[in-house]
Image (cartoon, rainbow, N blue to C red):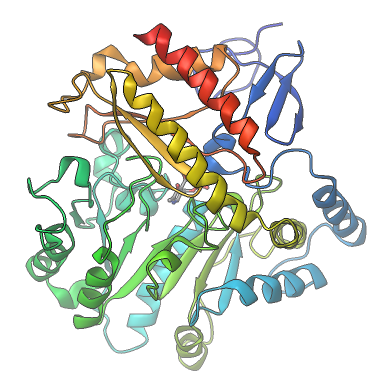
Length: 443
Ligand SMILES: Cc1ncc(COP(=O)(O)O)c(C=O)c1O
């Protein structure tokens, strides 16, 4: 049986393809109804951090469902919410301690923008409401989050609906936006933030938001050392909050619990999603400092925000089980060591003429494709190079995550490799074999 538009009643995410029907997931593998096996090489969209089919998660989830499936977040709490808050609180970077549970990354980004705004409103700085973000970033698809997102193709159809949030260029050393080379560049890409803030009016800016390692739009973009400290210092100079979007990078994905820990940077609001539940249940979190929440309590009495499914008892039970699983199986450490191995093996792919760059940290990696390795000229978008790689790898039983348009808003091709953190070295070898087979066909 074939699934896909226009058959049936489902409004599919993509209208131009057919979908295999998955009946089982186990570890890093997915199986469809015909028994075909796929390596979940990107864990969906870098979500499946602890692998598929983990019985411990199911047990915790059904235990909570058996007790109570839902209570409203303004009326009750449950043991699962309290227990999870404590467990997550223990691993958070210093200074961050108050956790607002939500259902998805975009939702938590919205909450972060609003928290920054309400905090300033109640601190006598009512003119501060704008958030500065980066081009070629991804912060979500709801209108507030999309206003921050720097992915041109996703913004363009909705431009009239977006909020006027300024953007600055990413630390894209492979194609430096200033034509410079690290470290002689003096981190111009970070310093330019100050120029943007001054032009826009520092007194109007509530926060700067960034993915500490660029994700789905630009592909595992690791900033040069020193970059985040410069950003932090600029925020401090103008009394601006720093929002750390760890939706993709958090929960061990990059070899630390949180990516900012690679550089020892403190932030004011952190957003988690994706791997926080390993995909077992919709869950995300907006996390901040006690002092900001204290201000809200003193002034208006609370955060003027909320959703029906925030602080969901079952979601929190799943989140708790996932943290426990990551700790018990030392997946943060594994992500670091397996990530080094993966990156080393991905380097071999540079033998293919169209592999321009290979980058990443921990088990968050990406391969950037170019028409010409020497000049770094990208393929024209009309060639749909990324889509062809994705389809061919899929055919060969490997799921990858695509990204396009990051070179100039139109062109730019990459795939992300971000398997579950439970992956073994021999399974990484399997991924490399399939990539080589796929790339040989492309050549
Ligand atoms: C860094 C980052 N922030 C926010 C989001 C939005 O999360 P969601 O798709 O759960 O709304 C994503 C999703 O890809 C993301 O990667």
